[in-house]
Every structure is written in structure tokens, then in C-alpha cells.
Image 1 (cartoon, rainbow, N blue to C red):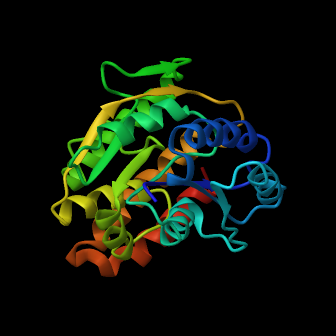
Image 2 (cartoon, rainbow, N blue to C red):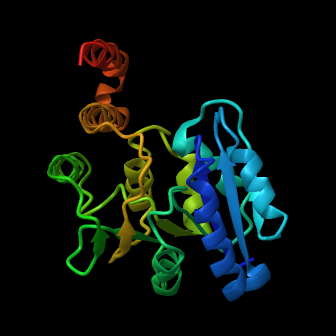
Length: 254
């Protein structure tokens, strides 16, 4: 098995089908039996798992690993990666914002790198439509905080398309401290700590309607998650419960 693509999905019965059809059609034609698409419906109250299984009837490359408990995007990626058989293991969002050709670009360019990620913020990237100013400001503030706290000189840790070599991602997943908002940062931080290289390349990304993201609340959640993660890997780890209680109060009144 050459390539495994994990697709975490929470209540995506409408956006997942066109995305999964596009990925299955593209990768099945190009890689045949050397690719698997692992859909991980997580804590879904809709027909996400059912529609994924329906599409899998036409594509044997699709495998559905359903998790009824809430484990978050990170937990879903971990479950999918644990069942993956590929030499290359990656993940991509279920909304279809990253077209299959753009993900395949990661496969073609990973070379000897341990990890390769797509970036919406590199000069050559194609992002449409242009994101609202509020989301762009929030994204750049978050990126600055990532650079400050973790020393990751990357332009876009949060883009949903990432690909790892098997020998890199498995130990990374074993060492993760979080599965929530800071999951992507934790993965990349652990990758660097293991001494593996990270390559970042420009991508094509199309905003898809149906996002559940509220910029203000999401920005606060993500900032708190970053600080909590930094504390997790520091002598201040004992203060994480205090930070958690303070964040809960702040979110309650925001």
C-alpha cells in the first residue's frame, strides 16, 4: 500500500459526498489498489457514516472507521492513522476545500522529507474566494503566536492537508498531548522534536459553504489551546487546570 488518506468527519453528510466522490475517483484512477481513503465519522448525529459507506460500495479503496464518542479532529485522525497501511499517511478536511489534485501535489513533492504540508499563505497559493478580513487577521495572529511559542517557522499550520512518512507519523501520534484546536501544531511540533524535516508548499484552496466556524470564539479557543499546549511541554504543566477554568469562564461570557 503506497498511500493512505484519512478524512475526519463530524456531521458532514452534505459536504462529504462530493468531496469523497472526487477523491475516490481521482486517486483510484491514478493509484488503483495502492491507495486507501479512510473516512472517520466522529460523534455524528447525521448520516455521515451512512453516506460514506454508500460511496464505498463503488470504490473498494474507501474504508469507514466510525467513532461514536467525541474524540475531536485529532482523535479521528489518530484512529484513521492507526488502521492505515500506507507508506505515506496523510489527512485532509472533509469539506472539499483542498481538491484532490492539490493533495496529490503533496504526494509528488514529499521527496525525502518526513512531512509535507499545504499552505494557503505562500505567494504562489491560489485561495478563492478571498477570506474575510476578520479571518485573515485572526489567522495571522494565530500564526504569530505559533512562531513565538513553538518556533515553527511555517506560514500555515492549520491548512487541512498534511502528509507524513509512516515512520514519522506513528511515533508523532504516540507522543501527542492534545486532540483539540492545537492538534495540528502539536503534530508539527512533535515532528520537529523527532528531528524529521517539514516541507511547506503552496496549494489550491476553495472555501466551501457550510463552515461551522465562529471567528471570535474560535480564535479565543485556539489561543487558549496553544497556551495550554505550550504549558504541557513546560514546567508550568501543573497550571493547565487553572487555565482551563479561567478559559471556561471567559468563553461563557463571550
